[in-house]
Image (cartoon, rainbow, N blue to C red; front, side, top):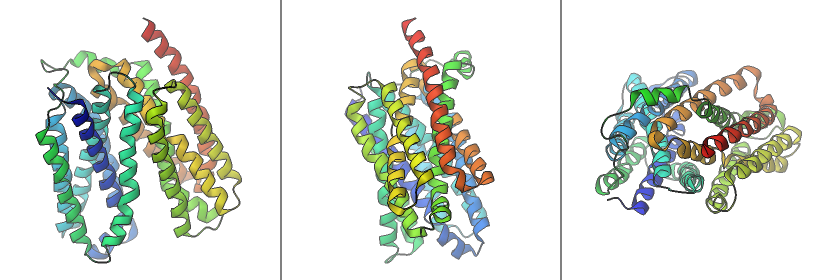
Length: 382
């Protein structure tokens, strides 16, 4: 019999690992360019291996955890992260790097989806609150790891730092081996017909498309804010990165608060409030004329992003409890596609359109949520 607190801790550790690994990889591109003597475009091509791997991991994790449970899956994902990171540290051929980034992407997509589904499964009520607390640990990894890398790089080589990060992964792997996890929901055989029907479920698809835009706007803020600030306000890259970090801090702190707020307020109400913050942040960014206004805009946006995934995935978990992993796979796959397409769209129209895209996306998500809530209410009553 599993202990809920230990299992929730496992989910949090897995999410922390996901945050640490992915923020670490983004910080080693300079090292890769120097070691392999490649240009920025070639080195940057590695970044495309991650989302493809994440999409694959997000698609396949759900049916696997529904059929076989979480324990072996979490152990395998952690082992793949370890192998991928150590391969990066020791690689002497660029092709090995590309494979390693893809492997880490697959494992990361699995960990991201698996930890969210696991936290939702063990929460009999207030699933959104549990998922919000889970999201705090990704933020902790995102905030702390760049600073740690910057500090260690003054003393150790990048190969040593990367290898050390890999061995850190062994700690959660051992923890996953020791504790008991919930039994598989479909231990007697995976219901293929029922799972395929989820792909055509209009309510699930609606919730997925909310995450399509949520993931997209979160992605473009992370990827294009520095370009927007440098172009519109002539802010230095160092200050632009500080502004961007204020968004991550605001998101993390807000998720910590939402862990309690979602137990007292309706999740939909919280989500509408967060969309209002995204809208306010987009408008503030659009009219910003100073560094201070840029910080205010990103703080508002960070607060607005806090509820998106926890609330929507909470709805998914409540509606599809028998196949929650598979339902999460579908929703998160749609989210990753949205991240890719909306990032591509911003690249085509230019970073200066970032505030306008945030404003439009917030309005679209509000509309989709209102439609979804009506459908959810009907299904719960029936």
